[in-house]
Length: 249
Ligand SMILES: NC(=O)c1ccc[n+]([C@@H]2O[C@H](COP(=O)([O-])OP(=O)(O)OC[C@H]3O[C@@H](n4cnc5c(N)ncnc54)[C@H](OP(=O)(O)O)[C@@H]3O)[C@@H](O)[C@H]2O)c1
Image (cartoon, rainbow, N blue to C red; front, side, top):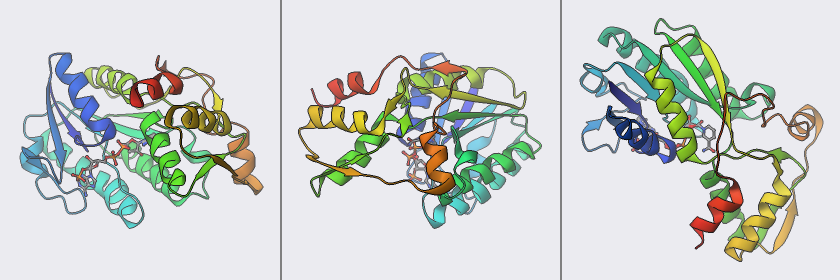
């Protein structure tokens, strides 16, 4: 198969390209910085050339702030239009477990809107919702540790290893788009507090715990496990502590 990976140079996308290649497929990494397939989802530039002859597209692109609308939502429309014109048979969108349960986060609203664009589009689709990546939590703890702090709360999370997730996504790309929404999670549910403690032990940074207060509906949803899944399609094998051992070895 030939598979285009939008955001194929990113944290997840690069691993999806590797997982596809290890399964014997041709993977094209599409992004603004891609050497072979430069594409800008916020304008649509490069899409026609990049999608020529592709059987499936994995959308692992990302955008924060204003770029969330331009890349995730409007970019999905541009991507799907180009896929329809190129005869792509399966669109796999990467989303977030529980994004619909936490509407007060602007980024999560954009993810829900992105899912809506995919579901109402003409290209057969699968939405793969994942939990937080270990590398993402590492960045969050790393940023707070710059001022000596360590975010802490009882909020349960179920972080996943991107290699584990990428392998599941590559397997999904080999199938057909049946209009399913699948959840992929890590091996264990752990509070943000305990993830932070593990991060401190591994990195030696972030001495002072900073309690994150959660109020109202959003707070309740987060504390009730909105970002975890009890009945996932797949569970990764590598937990946060094992990931940290490799990261800080
Ligand atoms: N991070 C997490 O913990 C997490 C958890 C669950 C789900 N997800 C979802 O997984 C997906 C990938 O996340 P990630 O953390 O791997 O993202 P990332 O590391 O930030 O990578 C984003 C990718 O998108 C590309 N990109 C950004 N703007 C673009 C544009 N205008 N046109 C074309 N490509 C563009 C980037 O390359 P260039 O900058 O070179 O263009 C890069 O390849 C996202 O949909 C995210 O919501 C993430």
